Image 1 (cartoon, rainbow, N blue to C red):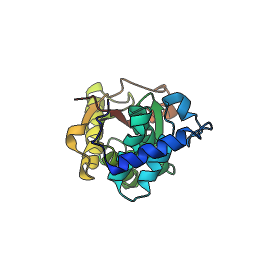
Image 2 (cartoon, rainbow, N blue to C red):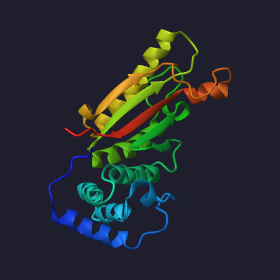
Image 3 (cartoon, rainbow, N blue to C red):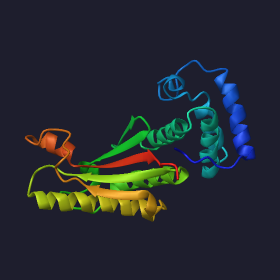
Length: 219
């Protein structure tokens, strides 16, 4: 459950925008889905955008939360975060997927690390910097970074490599301002394949790092 901030002028303005948007909705949301039907958002996206145009990330976050007070709460908060991530990562190979209130970012091995290396490639650092910028706007989420490998080599080698790769991504996010207490890392080795390991194409898909973004539990 997202913790709600104290009422403010911005939140009141956001609520007014929601009321207006709710009376005029009926189409699909910015992602081509009917978010109103799915999450009960009403004007949540409109409120998030209203906060963003102030140029202040805190305002954007509070505006999205203001929408949540009327509509879906957690759903609205995660919905606007998903929108920003899709926009920032649109021209990268980082895949953004959504399952309920969880957002998953999947970074393929070919852009993230060299073979048998846990050193981040320069060409993925720009994408990760954009991810960190969005995460910093939405502190009411927890982050799990999970490393995966194919089954080439020993189990211990792959376990160690997957853990070091997850830690490399986590360290980069922290260097860009994401609070360490929000992040945990896991190395899964070859134990969660998403394709067959009998072909190079399948092995390439299995070599990946995932960033799982979830709403924090209420305290």
